[in-house]
Image (cartoon, helix red, strand yellow):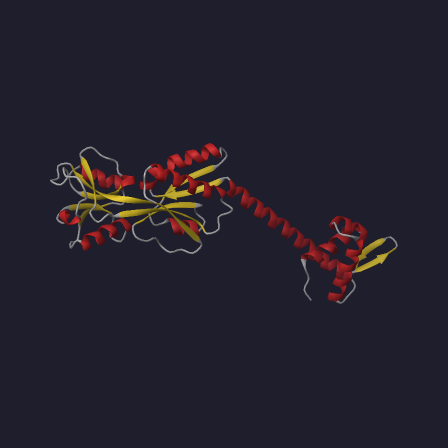
Length: 302
């Protein structure tokens, strides 16, 4: 025996209306169809569930007990519908975005302004996150969309989809007093093997990129100034105490500094991360479209 919510709902309506005909009207089916469904249900259960009389119909003791379960099922279904409606309602106009500051500064303000113009009721928010934190935060539901920087690879996380936005060239930033600052064209990192660097702590993606690139050129970089802030790294370069490797989007063009591309053509990929299924967050696709437009307007390679 396998009871369905529809069969229990039939008993509830017969109990409520006291009539098979009125139950049929409420359920939008014909009276013969109700009689057939009831006969099938009683046959499956193996006992009568409704007593028919001149004044209508009423449930047997077993029918009443089953109707109690039917009422509970109906209440749960109603609550489930309310939960789904609330969830969709909350997410339809909400967009929680996370991005590292070096990406937010150049890419997100214009994008968010465009979304606000098109959707004045949108609830927008942006959190500063680490460059590699996006996949986990989106998978956990803490963010609806993350813009991350990949210096080679991002953590592999189930339930998210990654969209490549642009390739952000890495530039060597030098004090303008440095002997190589007056030259133009790509710079070989080997020419800076003896310089002090400002870069991220060991193991962080930006530092790993520098360590790998330096190893390819036969040296281990000396990094006495450890910071994940590109602004701080450029301030240290401006002070003349370090050189730094900075993505173009994070370049601030501080007075007293010069930027040169790397001979190795180093880049970081800027990517957008969304839930693998994000139909419930329609503004995520809108933001993805605007991010692509901003990237193209800046002449970035996608």
